[in-house]
Image (cartoon, rainbow, N blue to C red; front, side, top):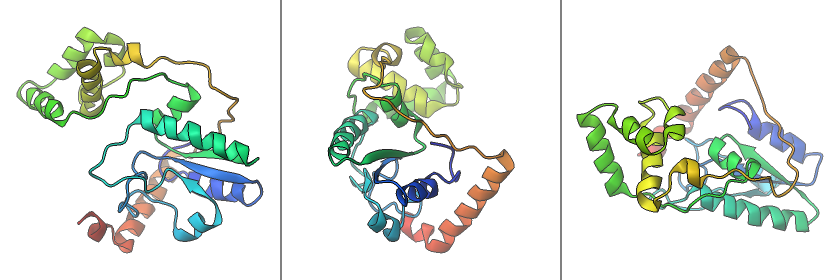
Length: 213
């Protein structure tokens, strides 16, 4: 795990050169097809060299939740272990990592876009009101987010409205199902920023605008 452009994918491939591993992507955007450049997916050479999982699962107009990712990952891990190989979970989507590392029990709440639009309209009319609403029902979760972190605030309210449970009450941490070795990559901020800027330039050179269109 590590921040964007820290070198996670390359380190994973370097490990694969010496150990019998299969890679499980922990990236909430790489599950989507047709979004190759913008999500920095492994190239065809890397995919051919080392088995990768949970990449190109669904189309951009389909839904995929952290709970689904957890279920899929647990199943894939079992299959990899049966082959006497090492499952290597690689990526930077923190919530997805936590579903395995912290073994969250969590509700399956699909997106409700009508509700999201209603909540956003309410926030546009009265800035800050959504965080106040979240604080009224789930103060622990509300404290975790800046009032402008609307994506996370709306999701927490969505879970509450759809399931009747707060995110704090429904995301229960448990012991991991098996031992996990966590490897985190860290770089100086200036180095990380330079690598991100270089990656963005490369994405435009590779055709990012056409991919988005």
